[in-house]
Amino acid sequence: MVLLGLEEYIFIISQCAYVIINLILSGLFFGKYRKYKMVELIHFSFTFLLLGVTAIGWIISFFKILIIGTPLADPIIYLMFSPFFFSLMFFLFGVISLISMKERLIKFTKIGAIVISSVMFLIYIGAWFIDPDMVATTEGGIYTTWSILVSSLILISSVIMLFTASIFVYQCFETDNVENKIKGKLLLIGILTTALAGIAVIGVTLTSGWLNLLILIIFVYLFRIIGGIFFYIGFTLPQWVRKIALS
Image 1 (cartoon, rainbow, N blue to C red):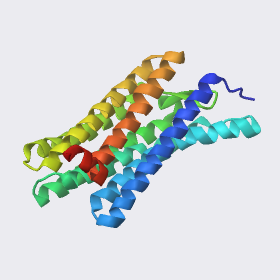
Image 2 (tube, helix red, strand yellow):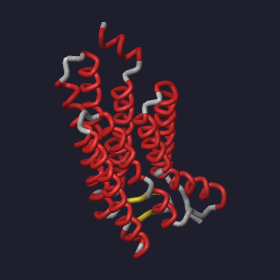
Image 3 (tube, rainbow, N blue to C red):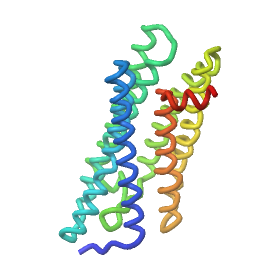
Image 4 (cartoon, one colour):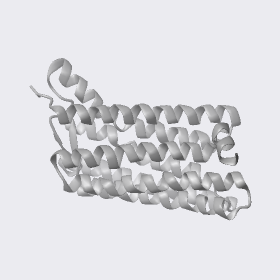
């Protein structure tokens, strides 16, 4: 029987918050899609939906421990994280659609996004099939530390996402349109916070105990949440933000 300590409760609360906020962002993007029928909005909706799904394995494991005293099997938790790499694909689809470039180049870069995401997914799943310990180690069915391999994949994914988003931000700053410049500033905040979250994943791998937990909650999940919120505001520029920025 697994006993839950304070660290596990704090960890799972952060996971629940992460899932809820990502699902809310997914719903908001979907609502914008229904209103404006812009395909990039549905891509962003799928991005945040998949990011939310990645954390559900730990939440299920937590409640399974509470109810029957045993956690979800570690390999299942790791398998439920695998949609992360397709969230990269949908994010790239969305941003590429917004970048000003020739139609042929857009199609080529979207194919590249599919290839990159698929390769990362296959590396992850390949490691999972060979030995789940190559993916991560989990204490008490909840508290997971990624391997260097997976941390590197997450970091590379973050770098690719941020580089692509940076191209759109650059184009926003280059335009004379005031609203686009506002979008650029908001997206820049989203890029910086998400970049810190990606770098912090390595810190999680190299630390343990309370320091590990603090890095995970503050510099990974909290910064990802903040980045996601600013990405939503920057890409959609809600009316209330537009009024404040232009006043």
